[in-house]
Image (cartoon, rainbow, N blue to C red):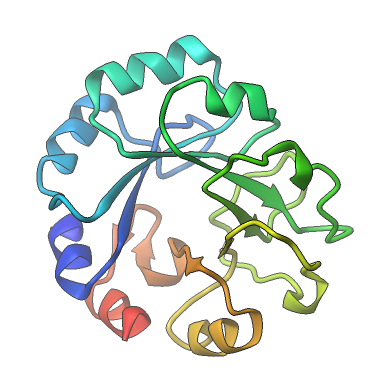
Length: 185
């Protein structure tokens, strides 16, 4: 139901979390069933965090993903080895600097999230958007976005895309259809 509601609301991409560190982690069997519901022009994004290459390849062999998103300490060589476009998430908690952004010149985008370095996203906390440095990459803004602040975030930051999870949930992994609709509108 959440997949169908997100697609109906107009989502451009749906994320499927494969890191056991997240309370939103799903198994590959469930993910395979869910991605079958995703239409051709909606991206199917696999989220990983510090998993080894063998685990990422295992998921890719079982789930037809179109984009990868890495949230850990993965370097550029690791991210690009899978033959799919990738997004690299960078932690903006703490100093709010992007010391290694240049390590990902071929990333489809950099995702800036509010968690501390080494931490897990999906906390529902925003970071200071004024701390975002000028960058040449496409920017995906995440961290604490919800229906009440997403328009202001887009106006202020002008990101290429926004990424939301907890801001449209009733509980971790359980989306709220009306919140998704309002967020996208």
